[in-house]
Image (cartoon, rainbow, N blue to C red):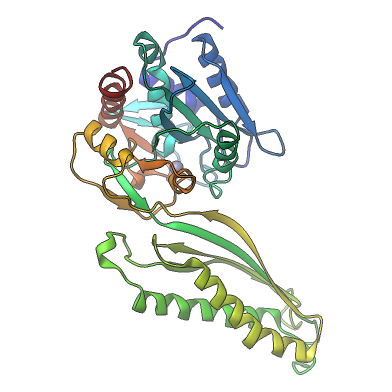
Length: 389
Ligand SMILES: [Zn+2]
């Protein structure tokens, strides 16, 4: 493909046109980006998932042997199912100074603006490289980025700074909560519902555990609140999201399963929550279930594990982005991102991207054109004031 050029809005339109809902392949988008970069003489490394239907893309503009600045964005979007969209979610519509479409805010615009500037990056001889790191499956538990990060470590690539372009209104965010999620399933023993002394009721035992999680949540709120953290709410939260169990009113249910999570303030010990949970199950639940039916069980499987972004006041990422965003402020957000995963391997990382999280995941998601412009200015400053000097 010959070198093609796109304005920021054209590139946003292009990336949004690929339906990259997390459950589906993101390869059409990834292949488009790889082709576009190849047209500009830039090679991409694709890091696939096990199904080979999804891939991360990593590419470097500028010298390969110098630690650079990573521009990180996830390519997947949340589903539009059941949402009352006024326009086609995968065709960007511009109206009243906004671009409407799934992923305009969360978070294709950051990556699109950066990609549209590739010709500008190439025109200047970069002394510090810019790395593109595009991931899959962020929206379903930040599952894609760890493979890319592991691959970079294997290749001995150690970037200096990572900017994760999740929507922050182009303000600098140096901390977010971590997320751990689990699925707990109980197996009891069926009986006629009149014979409660002979059965093991999985639903009722599950409800005791859920009740315990509620008490634990209240306890952490009372004992671990940190108003100075800036988080809203200013404490680690615990939540049960789904529960299923039982088959009929007059059968003691054999099975019940529920999904739950905690969202951790940086510095809180999440393992403590898991230990308390396991101890409650081992001491208060299982012995009673097994007194009736020795094969009764409670099993908990870990699902997503997203580390928190720990604030590092004055870090190189924070200082760089404050300068580029022309601000002295830093903030925190309560949602999880891939930033904590990059930080975990020792790279200075912040979150800073266009759009407002209030628009994310909703029908008629949009981004203000003013935010697109701000993002472009930010990245041009990165080019002119950092990478090309
Ligand atoms: Zn996102």
